[in-house]
Length: 55
Image (cartoon, rainbow, N blue to C red; front, side, top):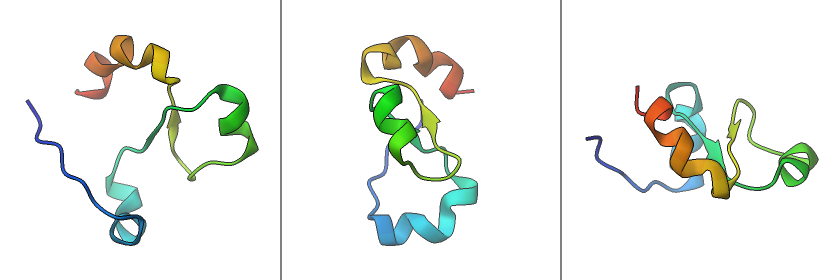
């Protein structure tokens, strides 16, 4: 299992190409603005999506 690591936005910004960013907000909130390349998986659907994200 992968180890979770917490990083600040400033630390994440230069690494965005190597990271998977998951935006757990609603589709409407995501559409209003999000990190480029972020995946939108609403929080209530995250459990079902985790197996695919781990590959």
